Image 1: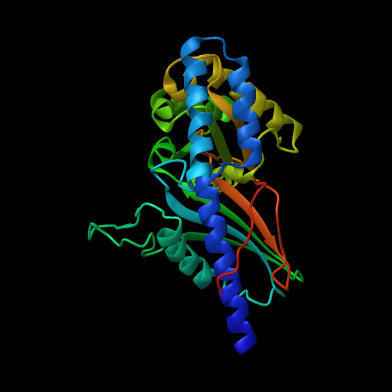
Image 2: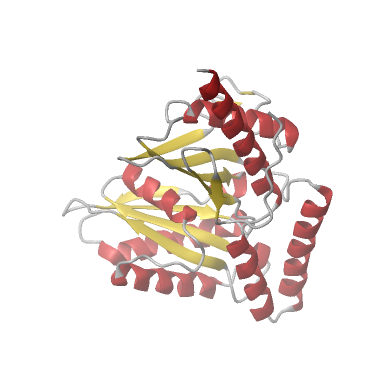
Length: 304
């Protein structure tokens, strides 16, 4: 029992520090994509905005402060093996880690209890942080995606079920309608996650999963990958540009995640990540050794 408590405290400490780190430093693939887009834009305004973004990132790391004042609502996607020793404790320790990160990073207080309308001041509340689960049989590893869902990037989120006959053209229309209506408000360039399934909740979960994928990756289905490329070209053609101030590139990419569906229904959903796309990926083994493939530079400093 004492050993389990010690392990739980250690994993909590690691996650609190990793959450705080992801608030300050963008993932490596996001930084690389922003550099690519900055180099490809030719308008002075677009270049100034990108330069400001990189200056912001430089100061966030130098001053050890979050890169955006809206540190979002914390969300976690957990892929946990049935043999991982702390599987019973993961959800509780993630909540504790968020509270610790709120104080130590610090993170802005973003948890408002719905209907009661008060801010908890801890970034936790009823059902917050959000934790989605995938259980992996026979594995002793625990894989955790972290995500900070900010207000602006959450705004374009939507899901619907298309009428029979709308087909894949209906998916395209739905996505482009959201981008032309709300993309401007989500701090472009955006990472657009599109979910396709049967009902609104399955499509929405797929669209959130899509935001966890690396920038530049593609759906393994050739037809879905083609739609990713076509949607990326279409959204870029809108001309939102960095921060919506005009430019040739409006997105960092379009990621589609899909599951099988009912023959007469197509559920489609959109979730969006802003230019400050703060997602992280950490994998623990049974001894709490960990590896991170989204960020370089993270150093765990034990406090327990």
